[in-house]
Length: 353
Image 1 (tube, rainbow, N blue to C red):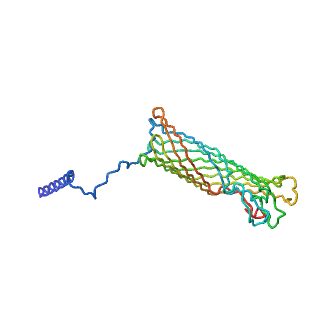
Image 2: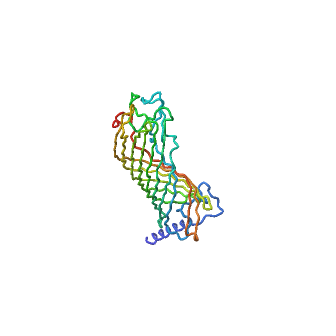
Image 3: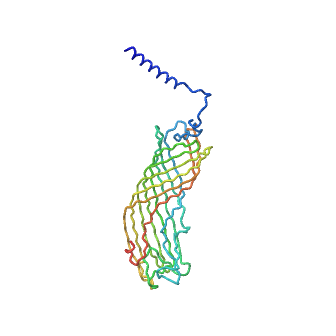
């Protein structure tokens, strides 16, 4: 009985080994193949690997600086309306023309700025960590007049309705918008080659931003009396930021790049706005002196976005141990709802708050 059982076991083991050997026998190279079931071979450029800029003995640390020439602008800074004699100071305005930093104004000035930062690569899996500080100085001046006829109605003073004698009849006005724009971005990402000629670099991190604005408007009455409006509009915020940059490698050190970013910041506005009038009494019919002072502070969530496009060139030095890169590009930055100045549509300034 035992011998019979042992014979069956040995026979079964031999059958299993024979089957395994039969399966392991390589296919006949001349045998026909099933095209539908054949696994496709990878293409010549079907690869993805971390970005390699080609440095010999890389130190995985870099610094960079950028010179910026920007043209800051902001909506809602119009400060006067040129009104003709047919309606004078009567509201509603029928023939008025908005002047001073208006939508089609060419009074925005180009200003200088810079961006400086540093970064490093993790030696294990090529993660990139970077910190960038951007600063832009804001300053623009504007002057308007009534063109010799009509009046200028001030937009930063309460209106006087139903009277052509009690309004502030202005003939000239000017303003200066100044401030400081500063952001700090701390980001991390993993740039990698999608192909040998394209590098993809998604990143995420945090942004801290500060925008301090000062606005001074001067209204000249009959070329003798000056009325002033002072405005401070300060904002700070911190929040999350995501960005993406793509680089097209052309060869000979040249490449195109494009980038975009979006951030959502929780921050605080500090607003202060007041008017100052001449100490000398003005003559009739301009004998009313308007003075007000408003202050406000509140928290808000504000979005901002960036777009950039340009061309870059790089070159290696000292036996490929160092690389110098030069970029020339266009950038567009947009911050939503930064102007919190008060304009008045009622004779009582507090009714507009």
